[in-house]
Structure formats: C-alpha cells, structure tokens
Amino acid sequence: MIPAHDRLGRMLAVVPWIAANDGPEVAEVCRRFDLGERELVADLELLFLCGVHPFTPDTLIDVDIADGRVWIRFADWFRRPLRLTPPEGLALVSASATLLAVPGSDPDGSLAGALAKLESVLGVAADDAVDVQLGPVSPGVLDAVRSAQDSRCKVEIQYYSFGRDHHSRRTVQPWRVFNAGGQWYLEGWCESAEGHRLFRLDRVTEATVLAEAAPDPPVRSGPPAVFHAAPEDPLVVLDLDSEVHWVAEAYPNEGIEHRGGGVVRVRLRSAGRAWLERLLLRAGPHATVVEGDTTVGPTAATRVLARYRSPG
Image 1 (cartoon, rainbow, N blue to C red):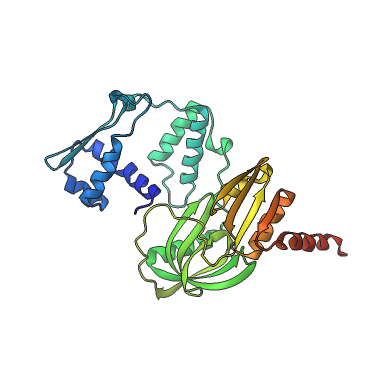
Image 2 (cartoon, rainbow, N blue to C red):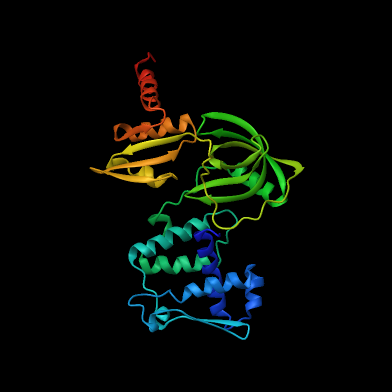
C-alpha cells in the first residue's frame, strides 16, 4: 500500500495538471505521472469528498471521466481570490527566501519576482524580516557531494556520528542530496556499514569525489525521512513532564500514552547511548526513564558535573 503522504503528494501534482489541460486523455495522465489507470481512478474518486464547509455541491470538487478523458472542475469557492493572513504571508516570505538561498537557484526568476511583490504588500523584506540558515555546511563539502550525485560517482567522507560520538571515514554511493528542517543531508549506500544511511552534511568535515562510478540509485518517491530506527536499536520508555513534551514531537516514536497530571509516556528507539545521554541532559529532571537503561541519565550528569569540579 502506498503511504498516505506519497499519495497526497501525487494528487497535489496530478489534480492541477488535469484541471489546467481541460480534459486530457486518461492514458496521457497515466503516462505522465507513471500511474496505472486503476490507481488514477481511485485517487480521483477521493476528490468527490473534497471541499469546504458546509460541503454543499457549490463547495465540492467535480470529477468527470468519460470516453477515455477526464475533467476536473473546481467549485466556485476555489475561484475566489486567496487572502493570506499576515502570518501566512510571512511564512511564504520565509519559504521563498529559503528556496532562493539554495545554490543554483535563479535570483532573477519568477520566484524572486513573486517574493518582491509579497514583500512590498507586507511591508517587509526577507533580509530584515527573517534569517534563513540552511545548516552550517562547508561549501566545499556541499559542492563535492552534489558533484558526486550528478556525475554518479562514489564519494569519500570524513563523518562525525552524533549518536555514537565517533569519527569515521566512509565511502558512499550517493542517492540524493536534500534539505530538511534547515539541515543538508546526503542519502546513499554506505559501503563501510553495508547499508542505506543518511548523513548530515554539517557533520562531514571532508568530502572527496572518487573516480569510481556508483550504481544508479533505487527509485524512491515522497519526501525522505531524516531518521530510520532499526529494529535492533534499544527501546527506551520515558515519562515526560509538560515542559519536555517536545521530545515526543521532535523524534519518531512507537507510541504515546497520556498518564495524567501533564505526564506523557513515550516509547522510542535510541540511536545510541551518546544520543540518549544528550537527550536526557537537555530534558533534565522533567524526563524519567521507565524502561531501558535507567543509569544513562545519572551517569551522564555525573560525568559532566565532574568536569566542572576538576581543576582547570
């Protein structure tokens, strides 16, 4: 079964294209978006349920499939001019400035023009309204991994593993370089680990493109996940006070239970002892280990405290 976010992303691309082309052939739509006819029809059938309150016929999307062609007609409600609130406008300014900050973007293209108009309407400028930072990555490192991806060559990196607090040199077959949550990532096959890995580029101190060709990457769809818990990773259960509920939101988990009194119990996989130590030190007394290695937090706190007590 296709994940929901992949299916939604596909529909967000398919629907406007069909509507803009006024009744394209079903076969053409399937070829363009690499879909089977049954998949396309199943997706389009969901549109009959899409609209706005009070969900009367004039607020719903209409789909018509006949004689091998398909039409999508938006309700009158969708033709009204879009009115953005100030926070929504600022979010668009921030997102646009972020995209324009990506190396290789067109500073004089249509996005830049739209951003200038939006800034004029809001009375702000991206330079003084928002501070866009896409991770402190060395330009040489970013250029090297992108070059390796484009030329389909292997890349050798010197990498710091945050979870294990360990430096290593690795040879990677690059699949894709992307930005998520303000950080640059390299996704690929790590020959040292003999498996699929994700590397944060701000933790790469050196990157060298190798002459050896890399195999083509696997076909992948949808946004990449920046964390992959392995089944063998240790399971830890934490009780979180209200001050640190952000832990349950910031990290993938295997279940959340509300215990009352503002306490949330979360089950998550630990990427490594060093990672768990840092998490517990950040949470302080507001996180309690219920299951797992209960000595991690106190041991880390004692070690940090000893540094402050030692001479020098």
